[in-house]
Length: 622
Image (cartoon, rainbow, N blue to C red; front, side):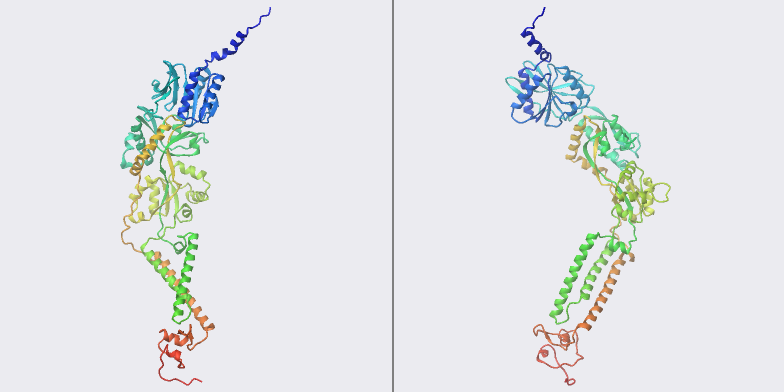
């Protein structure tokens, strides 16, 4: 016997899945719409228990003013991040609870994601939040919806709930959560583990030793970072357990792991790096970086050679464009001097301008300034870059540190490769020129040797080993381009935003600049700059050689001019020129005072009587 299913029973069976998923009522749908509108979120992600709830929520959001991007239940890997995105999650079904736990395991409950969670009751005590989780919990209470900010001060403490708002159907949203600082600015006594790269300082009582300013030449970078972290500890109220390591953090085992400070952060041994690090692509795969530190600079120091050759003095100080510009200027000055000399000579009734006189005037002025400059200034510094160092007679060595090996192994710069092959790995040497700072500085003092090491290690040794004359000859060039360092934390660390904000506050208040001045080491002072220094002939010989060359060149030009006058000029007794205002020839020389008496007898004319005088008679001119 067949029985038919009543229509009412069929409708009940169709609505049964929705009933099991606890549909949101109309008032509950309005609450997230008002909250998201008040917060002005432009991207909204919805995780509802039913498609029906999702459609109703989307419709209400689209009816509000302002366009929004809506995403329906995307996978956790595609969750949007940033201040303009929010995530609404209905905690009333098992699927969404599992999704929330999955996002917590992936570290997505942080300051980059803003969560609004709806639940029929209070949050569970074991909710897996982080220190920087931005979760607002909404639950019904006394005919309204209470909004609470969930905060986890310590991993072992209970979950704290701070009321930040209230919503009801008649009154709407009343939000008063602006007093809650986010990310949190206080860690409330949390114990953090910090790692510092320490090589030269004793490890017993390390925290106290790193505060001694008298020993700032030992591990200067770690001492600067330790003062910054101590200040952060006072600002954020956390305690410190200090670890030490001998490396900043470089790739090992085929770039699969990192050593040093980066390795301790990557495996979770420590929370923050005391020693600020330079950002590299390899390190970004293992750790995160927060606020900026100081510039990291490395120098190559050497004593500049005293003996400077003529070629180096005359040609090396200038670059080719400067030589071209100087030649153009000298040519213009020479032409101007010749035109001025010609104008004066023409006004006086003499010959045209002389190139030899103009050239002699120009070279004399340049030589005079060159001699004075050579006497007052030290010899020019011709070694100003690594390229100049490669072509200099100086040998090169370095302290045996890890970043030097990696730099020369990965650098494609031909200058670096030439410096490595011809200087660091010298031909015929059994081992590369890696020396400890004491040995390297002594080689600088006694040999033509350039040495690279940390400035904080070199400068005290130079001050103690070098004499005053050697200190004045000390020069430094950059080994690497100065790079900004940053405080490092664990990958996806909950402390990232808090430490970043605190470090930037220290920059704004001037603390970082003060700490930099405290721990900065000045190069050894040259105390003999004001003393009288003897100048040897080799230092000023180029100026004298330039003067001698100018005299010889002027003499050659003079002889050529005289030869041209003899060959091409017409002899003249003295005829009127320039509209009878001046006379040329013998009369012109007498008129302008060049000569006193004429050997050649002249015929007396009225024009000549206006310019010269005549004495006793001479021979008869026929």
